[in-house]
Length: 616
Image 1 (cartoon, one colour):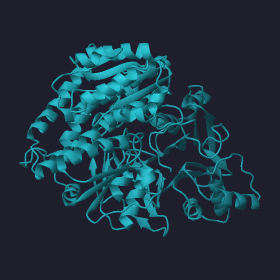
Image 2: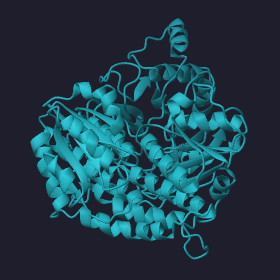
Image 3: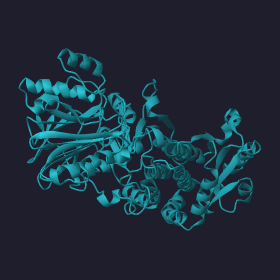
Image 4: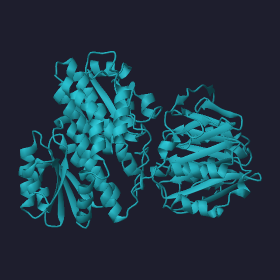
């Protein structure tokens, strides 16, 4: 959730820190700050609110700080204490300065210890308490590395810290136990640390992802790694990322979210090329050979877990896997699955789906299952992320970096991954899926046509948003493959527009929700011409009779549907039923975006949300 950047080396550090934190703004935050060595002392500048409030403290003049080459920066998502300047990171405890991502669970116990030692914490945070532990250990004569290590062993919780000390200028220490920490060597000499790779790849695409219980020590000479418990030196494998810094820019779009919606056709093609090998197999869905494929083939039943948008992807995957592969598939919210007593049958494969690869509840399920000896598989967009190291095998999507907090293209490629799995397994079980793969290959071209700025779909979406944005609430309804898209449409609207929105299976309206329908409600009906079409139309007539405003999203030329709607968005005719969700989700994403633009919300960084939920 929180963003961390650290550097030691030969580059001026202040601009590097601010630029790196800017790369991490997508994670969501409520305060920010930087700390850096200046004339042998560590100077701190921080503020509540946006990063610009910190930059203003330099009066846009970095000249006095060009001889500063070591520092740390942070964007905070408040957990302990309000989002104030006092609680913002970095925190100083004597000659020790640190930033922290995650939660220290035994902070009350540590606070009592700190107070008994005569210290007076200035903030409400758990972070500052850790700084006092390090300070006390260094005052006893320990080095910065050993003091950080000993202090960290006394805390409980999932977190990472990065620490500096005025007693050891030119040294930066990072510890990971839960929340992600990524490291790279500066080609000019030095070390780069961050809570994810985006601030680093401009300087070096060869990165190291720390595992739980590991320490990194950075100096101008480079980086060294140590085991937290033993203190012994360890070797770490570097991972090459194929992202570019240009992918992180808006490239002329007003918001990252809109840019990433328009990137969906390319992300689709890139994921297709990554996951399949069309030249070495007769299967029309030829998954590229890797350990994850063998796990899928051996599975007699699938148990899939995820959170948020990824949960909607696995709901959709259940339809495809059971339809084509004929394999029993259970789906659960990770946060619920791990706290009940699930019955795991022999032959079950547990799959964790997480865009970032760092979602705390999903990772906890993977760890629990591994302890039980249950095979595990991960699906993520981030190479080197925690799930890619902790699951028995992993599949990657190829969305590239996603900056907007509200997931778009990562959801899109997760959908594709499930359809490819279902097609591959289905063919092995005799399903006639050859025609479907050909349609999949053609889909990106159709998607690009649908996203034409001058096209009918964009115009219809904008007109609907302009008319409907004053309404008090929205219901999204769909059946079958459209149902998970209805849930995702409602979530997107809530996330970025801050309006009341709910998603329902069409048949569930009469079981309570229809009581909410009046002339101030909008019902968004997802009704392409599929096998659920007629039933969905019946549900639509029920809500229209009660005065709701209707936005229909269906197949262009569907006179029955369009005649019942106040607004209608027409999708291309002739699209295969199983591919319609890709078009539907693009429209609901665009509708949520246009409504948010009209409401003037912070689209890329919605309030109270974080891109990667690394705490429970």
